[in-house]
Length: 273
Ligand SMILES: [Zn+2]
Image 1 (tube, rainbow, N blue to C red):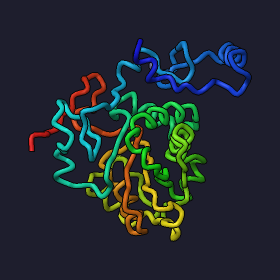
Image 2 (spheres, rainbow, N blue to C red; image 1 turned 90 degrees about the horizontal axis):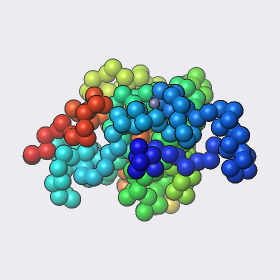
Image 3 (cartoon, protein in one colour; image 1 turned 90 degrees about the vertical axis):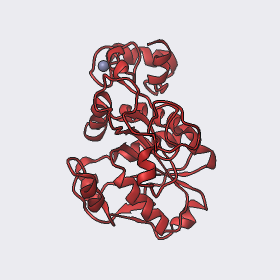
Image 4 (cartoon, protein in one colour; image 1 turned 60 degrees about the vertical axis):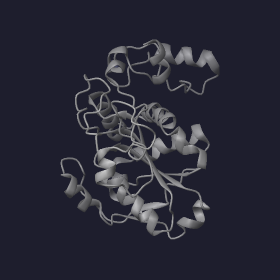
C-alpha cells in the first residue's frame, strides 16, 4: 500500500481517550477492520490492501466543469463531451473516487448503516478532492433529505460528509439553507430523464439565503453523483435565491466505462469534440 496508505487513513484518532494509550486500549478491544469488507487491518478507518487496490481516486487530468477523469491531459480548458453537450448550471464539480464496487459498498453502508467512521473516511478524501474549491471560503450545503425520509433514516449522509469537510477546512456548514419541499422517489433505477423530472422543483433555498451566505459561493455536498440531476436541481434553487456561484463536491461519481472496479483509471468517454 505504501503511498496509498496515506490516502486511505483518515488521520482521525480512534477515540477521545488520551493519546496513544487510549488508542491502543480501543484497538485491543476492537481490532480495526477494513471499512469495506471487515478484514483485519493495521490502522483504524482504513481499507484493506485488497479493497484499496480496487479503489479509483479521481486525480488530474479531468474535466474542469464536471470533474470527469480524462485518459490524457487535454489542456486546462478542455471540457468533457458531457459538459459540452449538456452544460451544468453549477460552475465546477469535483469527486473523490470513481463509483465502482468498493465505492458502492462504502456509500451504501454510510447511507443505511449509521456508521460515522465512514463519513470521516469519505469526508477526508472529499476535502482533498475539492481543494481548489475551498479558497473562496464557500458555505457547505448538504443535499437535504425529505423530512419524512430523514426521520426514517435518522441520518443524512450528505450532512455527515459536509460536517467532516467543514471540520477539516474550517468552512461553515449550513444544512438549512436548502430544503426539500417535494417528496421524491428514490433516484435509483430511474432513467436520466426520469431523474430530472423526479427532482424538478423538489428543492427550495431559504428566503434569507443571500443574507446567510454573505455573498460567498456555495458548495453542494452529495455522496454520489450519477447523472447529476439532484445537484443540478439544488443549484437551480440556489440560483433562484440569488446565489450565483455554486460548485459541487461528491464522494463518488459514476464514470461511463468504469462500472467495473478492476479496470484502470481510464475514462471510457469520448473527449475528441
Ligand atoms: Zn477490505
